[in-house]
Image (cartoon, rainbow, N blue to C red):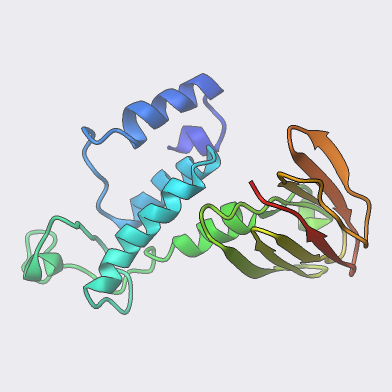
Length: 208
């Protein structure tokens, strides 16, 4: 998993790990939210946001469906009743408020909202939203030069830049429209637009 999102593997090796390990039902399942984070980040890094969103809903949602108000140290969907509270050989040995359980927040910000620095202090940055099956999403990313604000749906992207220069990347079935800046076609339904400090951009498009 680390070798995937730290780019130690070749693209071919990444695909082999994805199919032979991460998506292989014959491999023993990870049952702690802490380690599931690394598994799902590796899949996000390979563009599997649709699959990861389903896993987040099933796995973290499974805890919520059982009445959890905070995320647990371990969750095994195959367990029943009081079995969920046992760990380390103790009947009630499991932490039900585990600090490393909220990793979907990180994944949604990095791989779905898609805002990341490309130089120190967000002097330059990229925005590449991926809805992953969502109809829309909205978020704010704080930077040393102010907030980057983003709203993305299947039909519209709104972004307000912070200090520094950003580059918005997205894909569209049709030619997108933006009155506030110049869109550039990169081929294969891919488009970019430069995001300048403090400016707000409204892009109409049809998302892929």
